[in-house]
Amino acid sequence: MTRQSHHRFGLLRTSAVALALAVPLAMAPVFTTPAHALFGGFGRIVYDPTNHAENLLTAARALEQINNQIASLQNEAQMLINQARNLTSLPFSALSDLQRNVDRTRQLLAQAQNIAFDVQQIDQLFQQDYANIPQTATDAQLVADARARWGYTVGGLQDAMRVQAGVVGNIDAQRAQLSALVGESQTAVGALQATQAGNQLLALQAQQIADLTAVIAANGRAEALVEAERSATAEQGRVQRERFLTPGSGYQPGTAQMFHN
Image 1 (cartoon, rainbow, N blue to C red):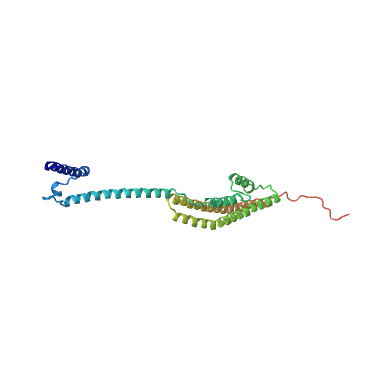
Image 2 (image 1 turned 90 degrees about the vertical axis):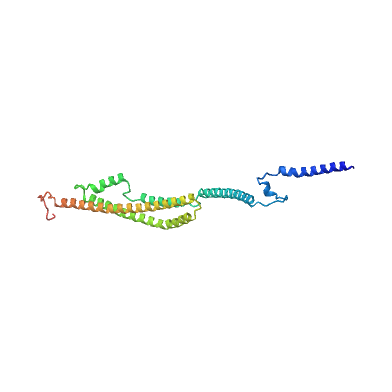
């Protein structure tokens, strides 16, 4: 190999090495770092703190965005969990027990003796046994009417006591239901369970008010019957007094036989 050929081969090898070094540089990302910042006067790499700080700031901002996205996803997941809890139904119901208590009180009122809680029936019986006491009625009829009125009064008092006993019997069941509903309300996992527990507490309160109303009505009915009997008795006494004081036909002469033949 001649000196010229050897020189040409060296140039080709140098060109190949330069090309191999140029390809990664062409494919690498381009930075805006000035050339004087990377290479010193003698070809050395120089550290630029300004450029390094900018790169760190860019990375920190990117990390902050990622953290914000993660927090947003966590909030959305928690919101879905809360919505699922709010839609969870209450696994406890006292409505059937409350309905049974109400039905028991209604049955007691429906079993009212003699004069029930019916407007037409009350008007009819009062017109028949309390309002009209004719002066022409016989003593037997007056006694029968007085006994009937006394029966109405005693029946009303008995009905009032039966209703009172039934309402008192509901107190223990209501106390247990109240305790259970308060416990369910305090341990509710969502808005729906809390609302359902509150609605059942309101239903329990309504049932207690209904029992109280029934007691007041039964007591008022008994007191009204007592006063009605008293008024009718006074009227009957007036009629009997007038009949006693009304002059009769007087003495009429007749034939009397003193001795038997």
